[in-house]
Each structure stands twice: as C-alpha cells, then as structure tokens.
Image (tube, rainbow, N blue to C red; front, side):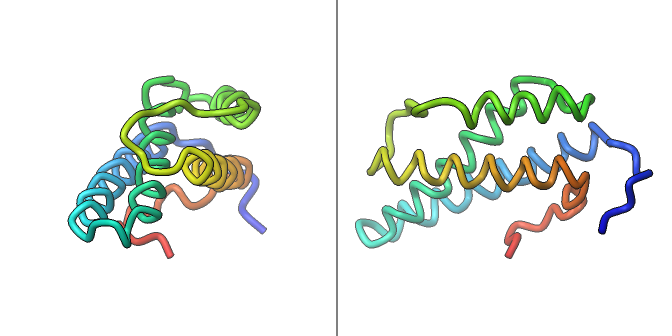
Length: 120
C-alpha cells in the first residue's frame, strides 16, 4: 500500500507528463520510420501524446482532486477526435488505457517519479 500521508506534488506530475510527451513523440517518429507494420505502435504513441498534452493544457496538476476530475471527464467522452492516425477505434482504446493508468496513479499518488522513457 502507498503512503497515505505523502503530499500531492503538482510539479512532479507536470514533469512526468512532459517526459511522457517527449517519449511519445520519439516513439511516434520511430514507428513512422518502420512503416506499415508499426501503425499500431504509432497510434499507441499518438494516444499517449494526446493524453499528456490534454492534461498539460488543463493546468490542473496542482490539485489532486481537480486532476482526478479532469481524468474522469476525459474518460466519460465517447470519442477523441484527432487527425493523422491510422485507426480511430485503436486510438480511442489506447487513449482510454492511458487515462485509466494515470487515474490509478493519481488515486494512489504514486508512479509520477518514474520519468524513464520506457515505463514497462
């Protein structure tokens, strides 16, 4: 179990979002170079980039409850319109997966210190 007394760190969340945004862009570029066989990887990276950019522009990282509310509102959407992807359903599925992952991290207030490119 996580330490319940650990305070929410908005700066750490913003740094994590920024590092994930950069990693997603690198993953998109690598998938784009591999061509047709890597379209799924491209859509997955594009979904992560969209999620991180959307959460960064919302500027709600300083308040855990507001950040969790933003995640809940994004999960409630039916679709996530974007251009330049290969498969809309696959993109939407990957967006939801990323949002659920970040929602779990937000609830537990854990995992934002891991700024490595490959999260595992």
